[in-house]
Image (cartoon, rainbow, N blue to C red; front, side):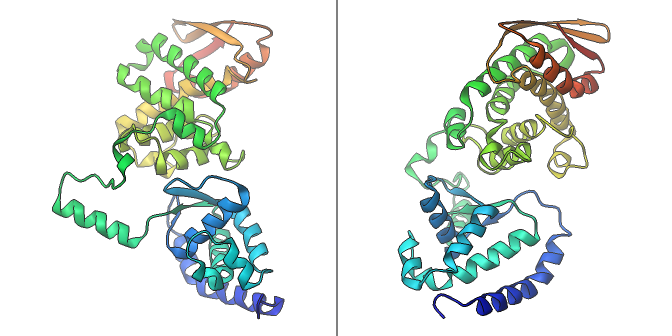
Length: 336
């Protein structure tokens, strides 16, 4: 029927779960951190979602959330074919399979507990073409657009995900100042300043997805499509440092962290410890801290703060977030 009846929808969803069960069982035994989707139905659903929500769909990767997909499925299941055709922004011939396609994707995401998937506007043929070009021309890097040679800035990337620019700039300023004053403790070369700056500027972009687990969402967004002004090794570091700006400390039990080299893991521990403190010092997002001075003394690190107004909340937050700093540098951090 058009639209399908409740009985037909129930039968369809039952069949979908049965067919997906073996694949879901196998995938749930694998370790994975991100999920990507491509193909006509997937891109059509992403296009409709962008159109209905007013979200830009200009990027090669679009974030399709499970909650929004559920709303989209609930809409599509009630519409006549002509109404579904009117919603589609690309190939309108897919209108007749959108209800089933959204049901399959929703069932898969629910079973795998995926909050969202990255939908790629590229398809299998694009990948085959890139693979062929790379084999024939070793210098080819995969770009095919006129803008491929133009590096995307940190600010441009952050703006795509509606980041709080003022807060992130304040956190970056404080983090870089801590890095500079703690050189003798961390022993890292100055080339890591730009990595710390990028992680500080992008640590909260996961809020674009949801507040809950936003540190993990930040990791996925940076890792999958981070600023093109950084290479893949730098993005690995930036994504992991941003991921550890809150909650759990870096651990080999976490798959992304375990895949880093021992040197990279050391960098992530040291810089995420600094980022946490800097983030804590802008607790109210009011830019109260205007300066700081670090004084290492044996097993104690004293950080004297300069700022405006009552700083008790910032000190309380930074003290709590300094636990990783104390662990990594084997000292006790005090703020005054």
